[in-house]
Length: 148
Image 1 (cartoon, rainbow, N blue to C red):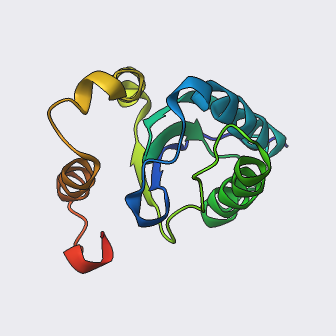
Image 2: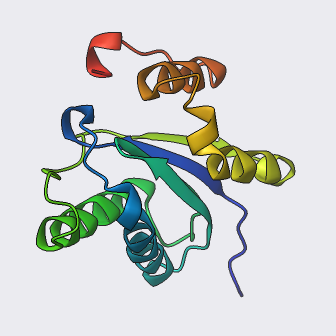
């Protein structure tokens, strides 16, 4: 018998100390690399985008994959790749934690468009405010000192 799933996650994590270390002119290389990691975990990437200090990933999660393992593997492998790649000279690492929010299929286009329009969105809201808003919208209790 086959396993079926419909588990959509909006994953967000920032660079270490929220530093702007993802070089905009080479960010597509990073996104393609992360897309490969996601595919290797039998997950389907729907959208990835970000800013110099954080990224957003909208993906499904294969039943054999634990969310924390997927995020850890993305962060570890991409960190090694970023540090070895001369196009991201200021990158020192990713933040320790991450945010992950589940969505229904009916919400997928909304999330895909939200991630697609990150550059425009961040003209009016910084990452810290965005992250707090998303946590609040999902009714996730948090302590601001852990968001810095």
